[in-house]
Every structure is written in C-alpha cells, then in structure tokens.
Length: 169
Image (cartoon, rainbow, N blue to C red; front, side, top):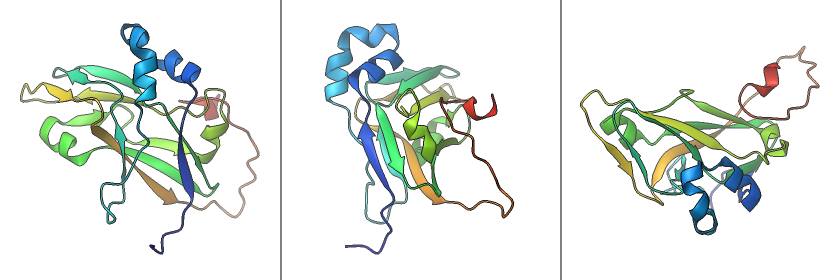
C-alpha cells in the first residue's frame, strides 16, 4: 500500500446524462457505449496521470475537432482540482490538443445539474497531414489531481451550477 493520500473517486454518470451528451450519430448505440465505459486508471504505480478512455472510436483529420462525452464524473476533496491534458504520446505524434489547453475540473463541479459530466473537446492540430484514430477504449487524455490553497482574505461563497464559464456568469 502506498503513502499517497486518497482524495477522490471516479464515477460513471447516469445513462440519461451520458446519452444527452452524445452526438446524434451515436444515439442508436448509446446503451452499448454506456455499458462499456471505463473509469480512469493509472497505467503504473509511478504514473501521476489517470488515463481517460475513448468511449467509441474517434477519427480526426488534421484540423478537425471532436467533443467527447467521457461518461465520467469525479468526487474529490474541496482543496483539490483535477487538471486534464492530452496523453503525451498523442500530443507528440499528432499535436493532439485540448481546445481549452488544460481542462480544470473543480471539486464543486460534481454537484452541477449535469452531474459533473466531464467532456473533452480535442483537435488534431497536425501540421504533417497525419490522420489521428483513437480506438474505442484507448487512453486519449490524462487527469492529474493537484492540491491548491486560497488567499487569506478569500471570502467567496458562490455555488457553481454548470460547466464551461459557469462561474463567471
């Protein structure tokens, strides 16, 4: 057993939430895709990142973008954040990028109306004309938990309800 502090738990969102995030072309396969979702895992005991797996095959031509509903939510301690990055090999070979550069999943996102469903918007930014294919069940993104602090004079008491940009509305 390691000395690491255990601060979070990955969960699968409800079927209704997952299905609502799918593009129409996948709706007929929603139940099968949902039943085969895999929770993020570390590849080795020395890995910092938890691999997020493609829920279905993703093919991106150079310059093409896709929004991926991962089917995953995470419950974590209040003083932690989950930071999301492309898997390093895909970034190196294909210039795979998250469209928001680094995804930030705050601890209170778990309680949002969308169940804290984590999405990824990815782009094949290849300038070598490489087509990127991510097979179903393959890691494409990794998440790293990071502890953070707040300022002495912080008095924020706002409550989140939503995803992208919801905390500045």
